[in-house]
Amino acid sequence: MRNPDLQIMLYGDNIAGNKVDINDQNIYLKSVTTLGNPNYLFIDVEIDPQKAPGKFKITLSKKGKVQSAVDYQLREREFGPNLPGFTNADVMYLIMPDRFANGDPSNDSHPEMADKLNRQDPYGRHGGDIQGIRDHLDYIAGMGYTAIWLNPLLENDQPEASYHGYATTDFYQVDRRYGSNEEYRALAQEARQKGLKLIMDMIFNHCGTGHWWMADLPSNDWINHYPDYFITNHRRTVNQDPHASAYDTERMIEGWFVPAMPDLNQQNPYLSNYLIQNSIWWIEYLGLAGIRMDTYPYPDKYMMAEWNRRVMYEYPYFNIVGEEWSENPAITSYWQAGKINADGYEPHMPSVMDFPLQSALSRALNEPEDWGTGWITLYRMVANDFLYPNPYNLVVFPDNHDMARFYMQVGADLDLYKLGLAYILTTRGVPQIFYGSEMLLTHSDANEHGDIRKDFPGGWPGDEVNAFTGEGLNEDQEDIMNYISTLLNWRKNTPAIHNGKLLHFVPENGVYTYFRFNSSEKVMIMLNKSTEEVAVSLMPFREILPAGTSGRDVITGTTYHLKDELALPARTPLILELED
Picture 1 (cartoon, rainbow, N blue to C red):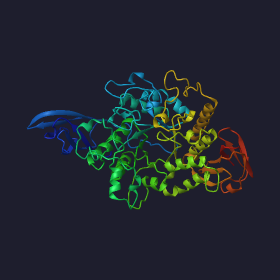
Picture 2: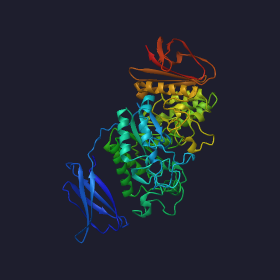
Picture 3: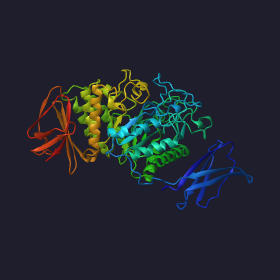
Picture 4: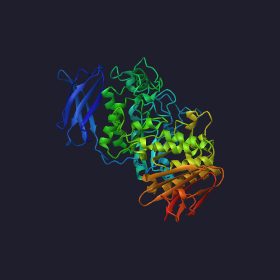
């Protein structure tokens, strides 16, 4: 790596009293540290740039007698610093692995793991796995997606509800009910061959109670307030609030999410280094294009900034997006790299999940069109882009695995759903679409997570509906699948939508109009939410739309000659590639 320093954690019975030797002239032993538990040693070494890939031996001895010797493997780098990250030319497909497809029924349960297969339980394990994703990469690429964000695949050896993956019990091991590390790597390689980038979901805030170190912690401060923990107050604004009390800040940062997820203490430098090195290892091992960091404002924010800095130092073209679930862009923008914050905090994180835009879009589609409601809600939110150092690198989305599906948010109204998807796929930023959105997957009004994250139709033998092949889809499902695929495949080859500028106009008569353009392309987007056809005067757009321009509808292929007025069908998006 560019950084020659490496920290190695050793774990064994009463090893702290041992002398440590490394018999390699290209490996310099800098220090050996114990944190109070005699069963752990932390070895800091510096690797000479001339060191060839291969093994080196770490020897532990007492009074001149060797007690133990272990080999440490230095792998050869396959990707290096030029590894490309996801960009605004991409569209992410968000998959919950347990609920997508069961490609290998033999790993549905594991004899050494308590949480067994139970498809009847919405919070049980359903058997989706890495092989199931590999089996359907052609489907994902064919739809027009260019990146896959996978909810966590690492081991979650918890007694129940382990399907979601957010209670890690081994940061270096894929859960055996999903497959193996080698299968994860094969998935990444096959995805790249099909033009699909891979984004890994990571969690630094907490682990699972079943993590192996919970039975024998490296130090008393490895976990926040253990065993006498308290639950976080979730008041995330303490990170930005100049008036926040130390008491409230501690309750937020050091409180546990739930009793099953011990809160990691990132202020412990050995734990923070463990997490940082782990993420760099996975990037290189898999050839990742990005990381989505869960519960971003909950860990120590200075450690998180250092993590971003070190990752981006090794991979300057990489991309990282953090989850800050706030509807206030003043809060979310605080975390993006390049932001000049009043408290001097430097975040170093390239991207943020655009929750403010998601919320505004949902409200805009559900509100009546009036002077202060409807499309104007979305228009006003986008006007806050001045708060972000780079709004074009935000991740935009209609929904995700933690909220009601967008189709349900708009009352299962197909017209409103299409308007919302058209917006997400043509506005600034990096779009993300949740699996099942392409075939109108629904759930109960209770919005229970286990129901929102239901099985993808066709991913299991015997499914009556198969969205992968189209078998059993109804007319609306076929319609939306074609609609999304058409938009995605068009977007893939339209640079003006990737990184072109955004120019928008105040919505009128239920119509929101905006343009994406660069030096050689222009796209005009008109979203008509009105229940009636609307005749739109083109005069207000003359600063970017010269008279006599024509435009081709990317959905239907129809050409429109844009003179003085344009008739927009009721409750319809119109996306026009403009030609002089």
